[in-house]
Length: 284
Ligand SMILES: C[S@@+](CC[C@H](N)C(=O)[O-])C[C@H]1O[C@@H](n2cnc3c(N)ncnc32)[C@H](O)[C@@H]1O
Image 1 (cartoon, protein in one colour):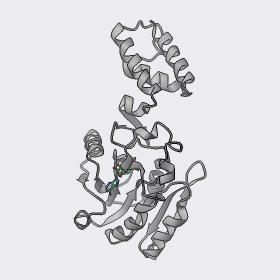
Image 2 (cartoon, rainbow, N blue to C red):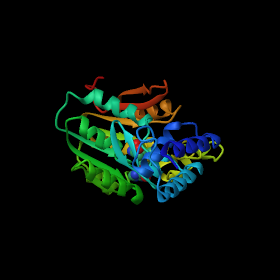
Image 3 (tube, helix red, strand yellow):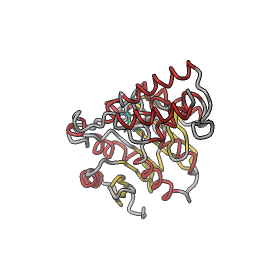
Image 4 (cartoon, rainbow, N blue to C red):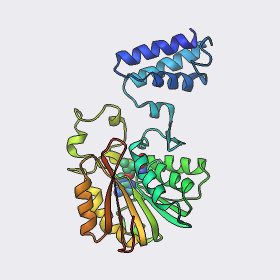
C-alpha cells in the first residue's frame, strides 16, 4: 500500500469515528513511518509499517489522545515528552505563560517556583524566555515526575526538581523566596468529572492532575495561604483557573492579604488566569 492511500484510509476511519482532524492522520503516519504523506505519497509501506500504523490507528479510534500515542506535544514552540501519567500541555496554559513573560521581561536574576509542574511546560518555558537565575519545580506524582526529569534534561535546564506535595510544610520550608510563583493546579469539579461531561480523551489523563475537589477550587485558598510568605516583596503569583472560577479565586487571594489581585482572559474571552502581588508598591 502507498503512503497516501494509507493516510486517506486513516483519515476516513477517523472521520467515521468522530475524529475530524485530518492533521491527526498525518501525524500518525509521520510517527509510524518517519515519512510525510504529503512529501512522499508514493512510498510503499513495508508490512511491518502497515501493522504498526494499524495498531496506532486502533488506539486513537479508542480515543487515546494522539499526544500520548506519539509521546510528545508542543507548548509555546517547544516540544515536551509526555505519556501516561502526565497532563498534556494545553493551549489554555499559554495564557498564563504569556502574561508572565509580558510582566517580567524587564527584570533580571529572577527566582521562579512552578507548583504542580507536570511535564514542566510552564517552568521550563519561563526559564527559556525570561531572565531566570533559579527555577524550582514541584510535582507530587511519580509518573509525572519522570517526564519532568526527562524534559528538564532535554532542555539542559539546571532547575531544581522536587518530588513532593506542595502542601507539605517541610517542602515549603526548603524553598527560596520567589519573584514569581506559577501554578496550574487540578481544577475540575465533581460535575466536570462525570463521564457524561468529560471528553473521552481526557479520561485517559491522570485523575490527580484534573480533580480539584467538590467545586474544583480546593487548591487555590491553600496555595494562597501557604505561599504568600514564599513570595518576595514585589513578587507575583500566577494561577491558572477554570471557567467561572475567577471570583472565588480572587476572593481567596484578597482574604489572604494579597494586593493587586487581577483576572486575565484567554483568547476565547474566558477568564483563565488570576494574578496577585504581596506589596502595595506592585503595580501592573
Ligand atoms: C493540571 S496539572 C498541571 C501540569 C502542568 N503544570 C501543566 O500546566 O501542564 C496539575 C499537576 O499537579 C500535580 N499535583 C496535584 N496535586 C499536587 C500536590 N498536592 N503537590 C504537587 N503536585 C500536585 C498533578 O500530578 C499534576 O501533574
